[in-house]
Amino acid sequence: MHSRTVFFVSDGTGITAETFGNAILAQFEMKPRHVRLPFVDTVDKAHQAVRQINHTGDAEGKKPIVFTTLVNMEVLKVIQSGCKGMLLDMFGTFVRPLEQELGIKSHHRVGRFSDVSGSQEYSNRIEAINFSLAHDDGQSHSDLAGADVILVGVSRSGKTPTSLYLAMQCGLKTANYPLIPEDFERRQLPPALEPHRKKIFGLTIQPERLSKIRNERRPESRYASLENCRTEVSEAEAMMRRAGIRWLSTTTKSIEEIATTILQELWPERLRY
Image (cartoon, rainbow, N blue to C red; front, side, top):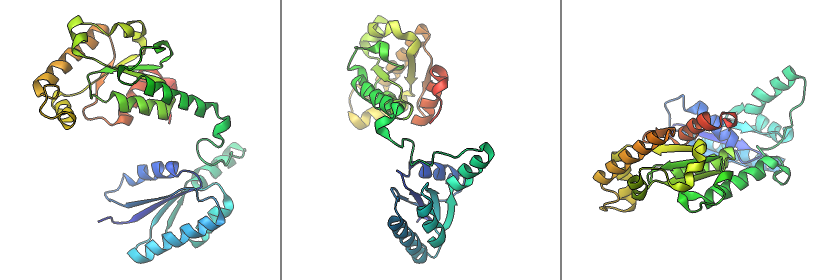
């Protein structure tokens, strides 16, 4: 059973409030119930949010915890005056003191992109996502010169989710290539990748973990057998060593950790959310 309900209230998507709130809550041994209330951008919606928060508190007999990233002051005042939960206004805590210190007003805009139609950063991110989808799993050899990152590794080592994360969160055009038995027989990288070694980063994984993942997809197959997984991983790691490619094991790492390591190695100037 959850020990407390936590609300994330925002006039945007609520992603910032929830990301920050979760980072704080992770410091405590508890399993709260999460409720995200996005697009609370009118006074009427604010009153609805207050009623939901207060009803939850009355029903549970505990004050809900409420993280907010509201930029509309009228909406925020409704929450502040009516909410019976523990209110943590992140913009009030951080943005307004910074305004005073810097002597300038913040944009007070909703979300990361206030107007996507005019945001070059957003357009670049969409372009990166399209590129990464088109170059997933070695589907296309075209325009590899336009890639920011090329991931290599055996099948099911985490290349696709890492590629999409780098595209969606960092705006990096990411291609990924599976290393296959033919590559191991040649004892060298796929020919299409040779001119782009500086962009290549390798992913590996413990054979036992790889076998388990592959068995979920193709149970009892040679592809998923532990013996085959050991052979492929060993050959892939040997190839990456010979080629002088930087690489890491994804066995115990999250997508965020993998992506951060890649950014540190290849694109340190893009190391930001």
